[in-house]
Image (cartoon, rainbow, N blue to C red):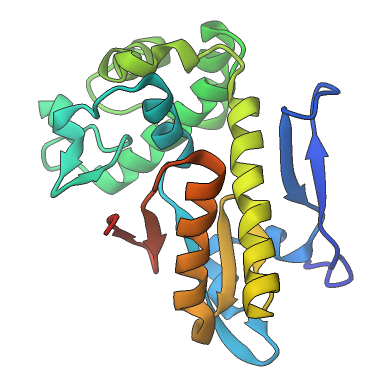
Length: 231
């Protein structure tokens, strides 16, 4: 049941550190499943939702000053989760389902303190979803780390909580830009934002501006479930 009285967001920091966590929580729209969020209205206006594409991994590659693996770049668009070029056994498989599994596994590994805890979390949270061609989650995680060897330092190190802090700074900036420059609210869902359709272009510009100001880089975003490359 959606708790509509939960209208005020607050930031949650972790480990008694101001650079750990910091994401916005406590609001009702975050409890609405993603497939239903398009039904949300703002002042009787229909809405749209935009999010940054793989924000933590774009940050990591920039931090490492490394090039994206060539087989993960398609038409100048880098997708760190699309590993189909690395596994011939995925031919004729549901690659979008595998991509979603890879995304979850990579983010689990980024947030895990150790490789062992990452493997255990994958077994528990992704039960029955081990992609074809791997004997166990350890083998799959090791393959991910091999493909993304230039940012391997971040996996299974507990660093994910710091990168959540970075994306929370971007989210805070997006909210401020939309309110102060355009006088319109957005509803944050971590690294995605719900706005009125009539404010879609304003939100896109605000997201690019916030990313550049807080991180010094440009990150593509997903619009209506379709990736939009950096212009």
